[in-house]
Amino acid sequence: MSTISVPLQPELEVSVDELVKSGYGSSKADVIRRALVRAIEEEAVQSVLRAEKEIKEGKGLKGNLRELAKKIK
View 1 (tube, rainbow, N blue to C red):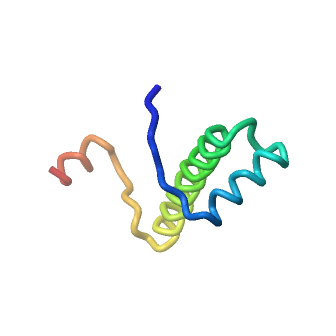
View 2: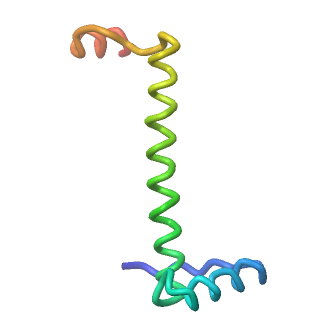
């Protein structure tokens, strides 16, 4: 596991401290890790929603995957 040092604006540090006090995380590092996990999960959800929208707009690909792959190359 690596350690990353990230400067925080005072308001963000206060928020992190409050999240620790409220029990959201056991430490500042835990709060930041949990926030990163949520951000990654949210990005995955947004990717799926974008893909669904593209399919509804007719931008999706249909057919044999091997044949489609040949066309993309």
